Every structure is written in C-alpha cells, then in structure tokens.
Image 1: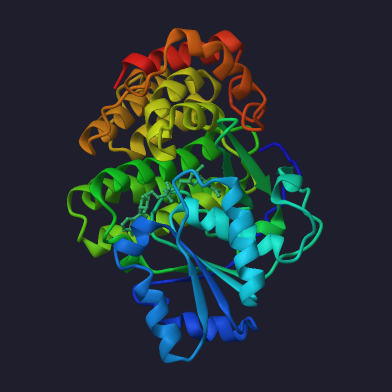
Image 2: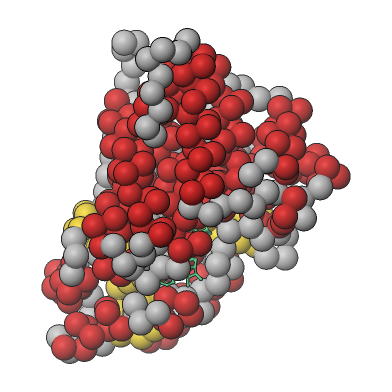
Length: 388
Ligand code: NAD
C-alpha cells in the first residue's frame, strides 16, 4: 500500500437505536439547552414524527418552538427566517427532525446563532469562523447522512442553484438516530433516499481521496444496503430493514465525510436544482452510468462491488466481473421501482452544455477515479436521459 497521510475526524456523537428519541430531554439538558427550536417540514409533521419529539420534551417541562416550513431542497432564505425566530424566542439549542432538507437547515441555523452576517457568506469549504449553537439532528430518511456530515446543501431558488456550506463546525453535536421514525417514509422516498446512501458509500469507496477508515465503512454500508434496501421499500413496516438502512446511511456518511464523492454527485447538484429532481432520484438515475464510465479507473473495486450485490464473478475476466457491478445496480434500481430517466424531468440535449460546465466546477470531480472531459460528462447525461 502507498504510504500517505490521512486524517479522520468525527465531531458528532452518535446515539442509535429503536426508541432512542425518548432520550432527547436528557441530551437537551446535558448540552445546556433551555429552549429548543425544532426545525422540520410539513410532511414530517403530518406523519406524526414531530410529536414523537415534542411529547418527551413536554413531559420534562422543556420549552420549545416549532418551525416546520422547510421545503424539499431547502430554500436558503429559510435559514434567515428560522434564525430570526430562534433569536426572538430565545432558543439556545436547535433540533432538526426530518430528511436532509430539515437537517441541513437546522445545522445552518445553529451556525447563524453564533456567527455574524448571512449564511451566504459561508458558502464553500471551511469559511465558518466559529462553532454554532448545539444542534441535535434526528434523521427520518435513510439517505443523506446529514446527521453527521460537515455539509448543508441549500437552494437559491431564483438562481436555480444549490449552494453548499462545508465546515467541521457544521457537524451536529449529536446524531440521535431512531429507526422507528423512518417507518412512515413512503416507498418511493425510501427507494430514492436509499440510493442516495448507496451513492455515498460507493462513490467514496472508488474515489481517489478514499482512505482505509472510509473504505471499511463504505464496504459495511454497501453490504447493509444490498441486504436491506429492497425489503425496506416493499415492506416499509419491517423494522429490522429500517434499522439497518438508517445505520447504513449513517455509516456511508461517515465514509464520505472526509473523502467527498464523484461524478454522480457533481452532476446531481445542477440537475437537481434546475429540473427539480429529488436528490436521491437524480443520484439513482446517474449512478449506473457514472459507474460504467468509472470502471476502468478501479476494476478490482468494481469487481468487489459486484460481489457485494450478489454477482458470481469467479469464472469471468476482471473487466467482465467489474461490469457486473453496473448490471447489479441497474437490477436493484428496477426492483425498488426507480425507472425514471433524465428525459422524464425535461432534460434535453440543449441543456447539457450549461449542466456539465457547472458540474465540472464541483469539488467532487478532482477525486473521481477517471478524469472526465466536458464531453464525457455529456455522454453520461445522454445515457441517463434514455436508460432506466
Ligand atoms: P427531504 O428531507 O427533502 O424529504 C423528502 C420528503 O420526505 C419530504 O416531503 C418529507 O416530508 C418526507 N419525509 C421525510 N421523512 C419522513 C417520514 N419519516 N415519514 C413521512 N415522510 C417523511 O429528503 P432527503 O432526501 O432526506 O434530503 C434531500 C436534501 O438533502 C437535498 O437538499 C440534498 O441536497 C441534501 N443532502 C445533504 C447532504 C449532507 O451531507 N448534508 C447529503 C446528501 C443530500
């Protein structure tokens, strides 16, 4: 193995298990919180998930205010609105409950309680000067891993752009992970978010920035997803599958937090923002096409991925074995009902120049196992416009 220096940092404490949400009051107290701002979205509220948090807070006489206006691909302006609310209500601890949209916003609000200016000032990597207010992240999708990542992805809806704030100060103080809260997630969102988690594990595993700690976690996450994603989608009430998918998503996030990702995520950002494609869905559409392009950059690892997803490859050449990883992921997508293409969301040949130019600026491109040209990125998009 090549000797190189790598670093692994995980500022977030993790508490995980069925019923874990009951421990929320003791964590709020331990972190010195006297009044809580709960950040969530209307769907999570309607599903009764927010009640699972407010009940123990009430029982323990801990005051809280709820901000539940978050929309999918959260509007960056919501950070301002929620920060004003937190300040006017005297909230000193933020609890995000929901998918990546709610958690990313909650994390940014935590930052803005202790930092000057506007969250837009901190777009980019390592621009935040100070630690924020404590944030407890309670995930209700098994996909983004936002409950422990350095990232908040926020949308400028007018500019149709996604802006990312990345900072170790943006890692939540506590990831409070209760698989029971994911049982109400509808099948199509379970499928899309599960593919997001898989894309995290897989892109981190094959990319040039990966390191031994991340590699181990990527492998573990992929094995758990291979075993559990189909069941979680078709039997949403299966708590064992939900448990393992939430754990897999968390572990995948631990893998990619220090390594970044690859071309699926580089393209997913502009495509998601401009064509309103849910983040997990656009990753799922792109992943097999990106894998097919990347195979040559790491045939051994793609062969290993084929094995994880149940392909028998002993009788095959290395190249053929690696190719089986792509067909295995296409089969997984089909089994969980993801049949959309980029064309279904209105993407046309005329859109590709702008999309690939923006994607090429992403920090996920330099780490990709194969260095792409703009034309390569277009070819990946073209394949994802027709294939399903
Ligand atoms: P989401 O948060 O947008 O939620 C999708 C839908 O699922 C919403 O309508 C919500 O109401 C519903 N929902 C969530 N949990 C539910 C539950 N338990 N029961 C019923 N309904 C439920 O989706 P997401 O995929 O988790 O997050 C996507 C966002 O996260 C995007 O903005 C993406 O860019 C971002 N993201 C962030 C990171 C990161 O590291 N911070 C990583 C990947 C993606």
